[in-house]
Length: 379
Image 1 (tube, rainbow, N blue to C red):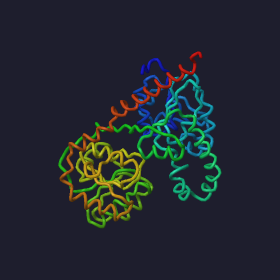
Image 2: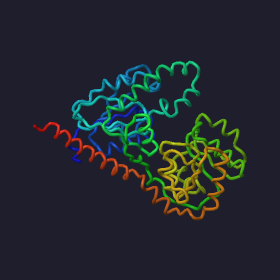
Image 3: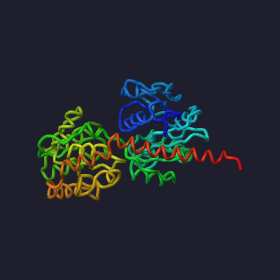
């Protein structure tokens, strides 16, 4: 595909942090270096230099009071805001979706591809969890607003020409909630930052945000019961509760810089990953460091961890199931080879993403141009 002949727009839900979705956007900028970015709200101080240097346009949400902090409170207005964005003149629009992004209106001649991290979780697969965790006033407001947003979200899926999911699990959700097929291109992981190094220690590792669905409590309780050393790296609203339940073999380290994280990845016996994630970047980073993963075998982890080769998967999201998996791992521990693990992780590198996604878009754009030509041909 001759990118320099195309005018490309990238649509992202909001740009106020640098997390997985924003890392994908960085790679899209690498593929399409002249693309414009559209989003609801942007905090330039929170962005990487690669994104901060780009031409970024915002919806009217950015002009609302305290939008950089309270952007989620404006969620009911975002469908209307997206539809006001003027994307005329673009040949290719790529929306980056796990919040409202795909609902833009494009010309008939424009190809719209949506890279979907997940259909909005708070509307679909995790709606009941979000509802139960909300306060009474928020819960009462959610009922009518989320009903409206769910209808809009389903309808706006028809505006997308082709969906690309970040895992087979997300492709399944797209099929379930939107009734659309999706290709799968795994998101980019900066695997080159993590390499096998140092001698293996005697501890297990949990790394991630300390929120309920990450199930750090399962990792802590399992290691409490079987007396295994566990290092926990991360912070979040669950931190105080988890510190109270941590026994003498548990070390709570809080958030750590990447150089410390690299060291602990490379020296742990294995990473414990009890969450169900859409994809899961942390397990890939651990494997790039030459260390296996013990994980709950549902969600995106099934795309990254091969049971018995790069880690151990367990069937039930319970402490008992995790304990059994740890014991099974210890019987197999010497069979997990760092060079094999690191090589496997390379399949999910940034370069692999750029190659796979770029090739897919090139094919879809070629098909699109052929279709347009056929439609405009004289009888």
